[in-house]
Amino acid sequence: MTGRRADGTVLLCVLVFCVTVCVGTFGPLLPEIARAQSLADWQLGLLAGAFGFARMIADVPTGAWASRRLGTTLALSPGILVAGLLLLGSAAPFPVLLVGRLLTGLAHTLGMIGGLTAVLTDDGGKSASVRLNTFEFAGMLGVLGGLITVSALPARWGWNISLLVASAPLLIALVLIPALRRRFPDRGGRSRDRELPITAPASPRAAAPPTDPIVWTMFTVGALMALSWSSVSQFLIPLRGTREFGLDRAGVSRLLATAQLVDLAALLPVGWLADRVGRVPMLAAVAIVMGVGTVAVGLGSFTVSAVGCALFGLGMAGWMLPLGVIREHTEPGRLGWWTGLYRLGADAAAFLGPLICGFIGEANTGAFTAVVGVAACVVGARLLWRAAV
Image (cartoon, rainbow, N blue to C red; front, side):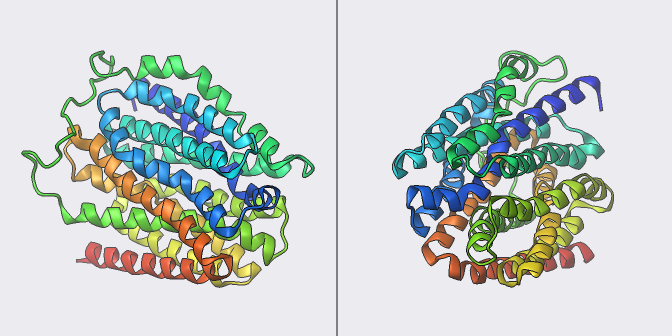
């Protein structure tokens, strides 16, 4: 890895860490938001899902824009996130909270799509999966940091104060904006390392070879992972942990942190193995593990759910692998487009997960997540069969 590439990866990792902390702070506070704001389950589902909805709407436009305005895409993320968090922290009526949550989703999209586009276009050869998982590692570290911080804050603090204080690392991202603009200039300026691809992504079918079916399979895997993650971490664990297991904010945070710690521990080894044994068989294995963990979290007792959280975290360590497979079957100039399209599918699932859970109610969410887990196992088994033949 060259010095310039390492420098860019470090900047991207710091950015994604800072803009992802708020993802970890939100889940444990969901029961308190329900009580303080007098929200019904359907409103909680809508509020939690709004994050994924905003990302779903913004993914493809952001992917197309990032191919041309990469520096601007990365620079806008922290500022918009500050605005969204301030609206959430106002503890205003439900519509205002919803707008704030939508803005946080938009901001996170700008950071993630911009960061992924920068990583994918700066081809790392045999280290591509490791670099993708390093980027993901930084994001998951941000989620874990948010969980740990919010659990350590005094319980007497209101949910909104805890949310704002725990999201304070975002201030670092604001300071990094000038460095991001210099390292990842918009198209029209040149990076000293290499120029960003100039193929316009606006018409992906024009003069392009047929899309390999494996690409669409990766979209399915990504959607199942996102549906499982959003349903489990943004709805099921916080509410089931509070209502059924009698956990407080710290207890819910520890349960969620179990998955994050396993995810962090496995991310880099999974990326290293994928570069050596193949991304498809490695992805098949983690999809099956994630499916089993999701079923355990949804239907198991407290002990079984805790073990399920660990398996769930191990499965989520393969979150970046579908993008690596897509990169292998995509022209370099179209990576921004396909990255955005992939994120569209994943974030549509991330939006639908809490929304469905909210409308069917917490009592029925366990069965729903179990169905999602079984589907992940089936897709993983199919990928294993493909790799074997």
